[in-house]
Amino acid sequence: MTESFAKARFLTVQEVADLMRVSSMTIYRLIKAGELPAVRVGRSFRVRDTDVDTYLESRYTETA
Image (tube, rainbow, N blue to C red; front, side):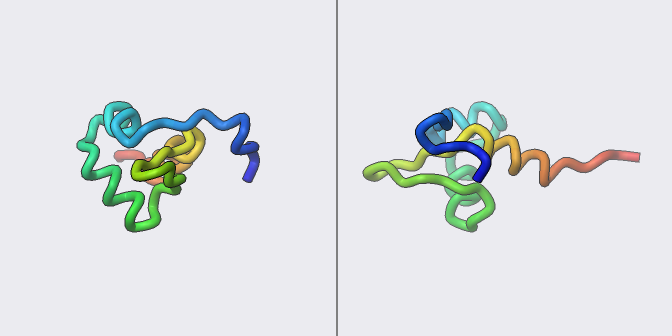
């Protein structure tokens, strides 16, 4: 881990969904599948902004 949890910026599932322009259910599916790391806080999840960037970078494809 390159960043301390204390210094990390955490996003809610809805904020991640808005950022990626997908439904919150899609984000929950990614978390459950282990594709997007998340921290459980009570009954909700929080996702580090750097983990969102890492996920998107790993899915990037170039078109010909």
